[in-house]
Length: 192
Picture: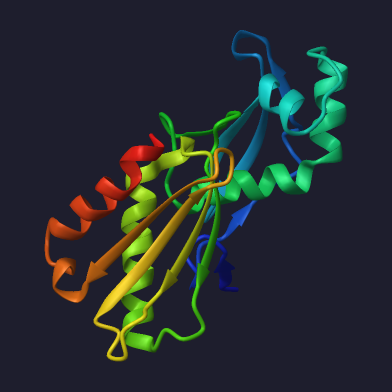
């Protein structure tokens, strides 16, 4: 069954599941909890650090018991963070690793975008996701167009942690090879 990819706003046929077995386990050497995922039937290991469980998911202390309590309490949210990394292929040596700096995207596409401009925005967002990777932090992005013919796309990127806001205007002709990647990398550089 296709599911909506919240990050990219399109439908994907990938099946991403988080099976109950093997049960999540503590990995002492990495100070993480490991939990399984499956992408189209293939197993993936997901790791979430003790630090992120304490900082973001309110584990009381770094004991295994507190870490598992936080993991169990916020399991749905943790699985969604892992799902986003899997969908974007943000894997580290074939593993999903969720740290305090994991990429958390809030992407909005203006209702005013017509299909051709919307397709360009989806494409540009996929390119942008490859550029920013899994450790970009909490970013909000708004795609819109102010010109009547929608030859240009406006991207506003906001770092929700620092409130840094960067606008970017991408003209239709900049979607040619190399220019789009350069413009998006230039837009992201103040955040990295």
